[in-house]
Length: 305
Image (cartoon, rainbow, N blue to C red):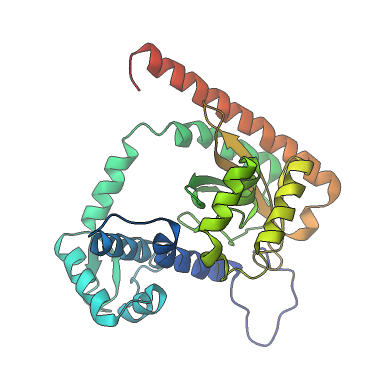
């Protein structure tokens, strides 16, 4: 059962919740690099190639045949000839491959090699969060996420399904949104200092034009509510019917670097259950913080950064 399974069925089946969220995340990947910060002179072509590589990964995530040139052009907002030229270069280097039957694109062998190499690096946060995500999903029976801060944005890096009947597809691994959009993302924003919150809002102002209902005043109110409640609540603000609750995760230096969140439908987030879920998430956030602290101390003892 998906998060919108209990809604009345119209004559034509409605789009899945996840589809709308992923389109939004795709737009963010395509456009926020120019909005977020000034780029070094001469780096625009590299940035555009990397953005397109990310887009291929996100858009082709659930499509075995890949994503078309037309859709990559539409989402990126780049001229078709420019997109094709970059794709040809990425294909030549093995980072993207083109399906010979459909002419669609998906990540290539070299992208997989990089992913494997990245997986071999010391990923303290990923390792520390694995057991916590499983415990949260089992105890809550809901879909559980790890969201990681990347500058003024948040990226979903892990997802764990619970054993319950609800499957929430409003967020998937690789989805990227401005801080404050979604429960985990809002939890991170609320854990920042007031000055950092203002910096985030300034840097994401253009991107948030495409997220109705997330203007500066609204996010200030949501940050205030999150700090008061001790958790961040997304009460269907991103996608109607999709609710979530999140808490921030701090690293060894006590910086809010990530968030744990649980997502389901509104009926499963009444007042009493919110407190139960928040307590569960806080316990696991403390566990991850302790693990990150121990890992940092261990590396320092071995003379490693």
